[in-house]
Length: 320
Ligand SMILES: [Ca+2]
Ligand SMILES: [Ca+2]
Ligand SMILES: [Ca+2]
Ligand SMILES: [Ca+2]
Figure 1 (spheres, helix red, strand yellow):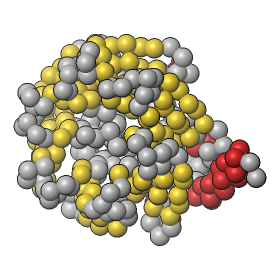
Figure 2 (spheres, protein in one colour):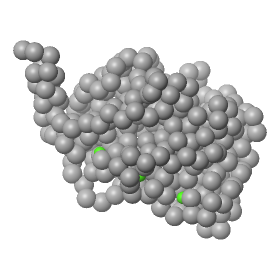
Figure 3 (cartoon, rainbow, N blue to C red):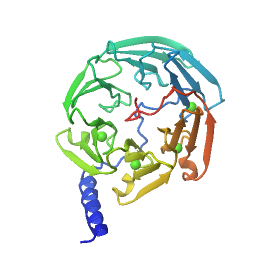
Figure 4 (cartoon, rainbow, N blue to C red):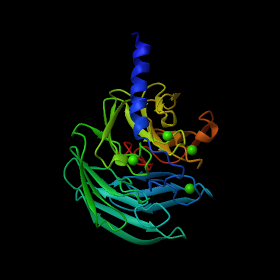
């Protein structure tokens, strides 16, 4: 069998395996992971500046520029919709004490209240917030050497512990089977290992996509409400490799975008419920976006941020 035939056979096997698990849904899921702070249906461009412990947000609706100090140097931004509020909360996770600090908006773009929850704090703990229980809100999660510790929003009274992965794996929690609950997904040198929430975490699936050294990303690029496996391969230019779930992986896209030193970002700036392809270039403080609305053919460029800033983006492996 030649290489192409082997590749095709392998792809078909994976496609078959995944087609068994994909649960079609016909409503847009709110994973609670957006960055639409001004609530106009479009994600906003935002950065977290560690030196000032400040969020800088460019509102998409009116171009309003907002900045809010929240947290301390050394914190990790983990914004998302944890509260029952309509807007994403400003949130940081503090590795030194394992406390998650939330600041909630009201409808006037003012802050109504604050909250904090202790969850994590062991050396090496990785925050993995995601909507694990399907409540349309983001839950708190900590990945610790292959164990996922979760605390469900908004009350944070219920917890879950799930074993999936190993210490060297990269956790990439996303909904890849389309049941509106985040799956426990780990990336291991090109292999994606998935514990399927649609099968009550009792069954798993594996997909080969990408290779060692790639940055794993997962988002819904093709608009079928199922997150697609994707990797960012840094180079000159960098390459985005996207495996489309709408065809169970029989179709894919390879798009050159970005260069060495850029930070890949997944967000929905045009608000069409399909992920846009974006890089933040720290050396310039510039966002370069290819919008899904334009079939990734036209570039949108926006200055926002400085070197050292952390892009505030949809959750996944892009958390620093
Ligand atoms: Ca917005
Ligand atoms: Ca799922
Ligand atoms: Ca998809
Ligand atoms: Ca989009």
